[in-house]
Length: 183
Image (cartoon, rainbow, N blue to C red; front, side, top):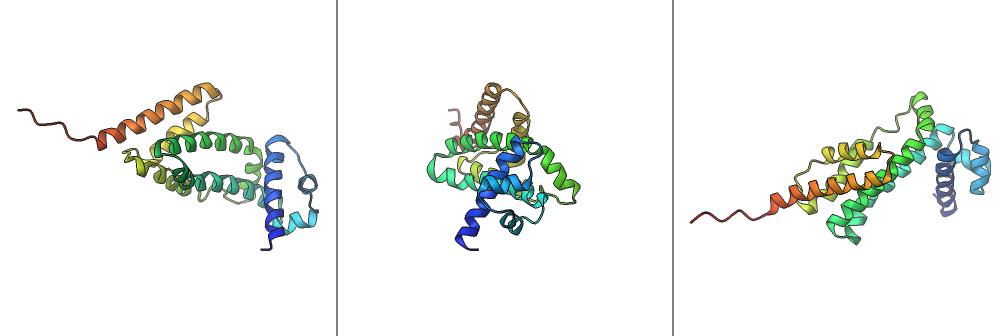
């Protein structure tokens, strides 16, 4: 794909994310206009509204999952996991805002969530491994989903702190040296 085509596709997805999360009945023409491209360019990349919505969802999922190894390169393992958990909560809020749009995709017979679980599990496993944590990736995901459903950001932060403490406790218990034998 040419550089300008890649740029246009990225702009369309970025503008569509904002539009689908803030405007109920936004038109594809309005999205193209806000992105600074013609409607033909939009349709070349996304032949249907559902294809654009699916691309928005998948792009957000990719950003979140791709962040796991990137965070480990720039942060310590604990900080990387915590930053990723914060990003997961933001991702879940975006997904919630896209709910109506995603329902239209599902109604069209497309499953945008087909690979989500595997990608998320892999990202979480990547973050847990350097900690030596005994936490199973799917258990952590279940906890994060519960926190993401909370509407109180302050409580969500406290709940993430508790989750981190639990993950690290399990890691410390696993990596702690055995107690000396009694004499």
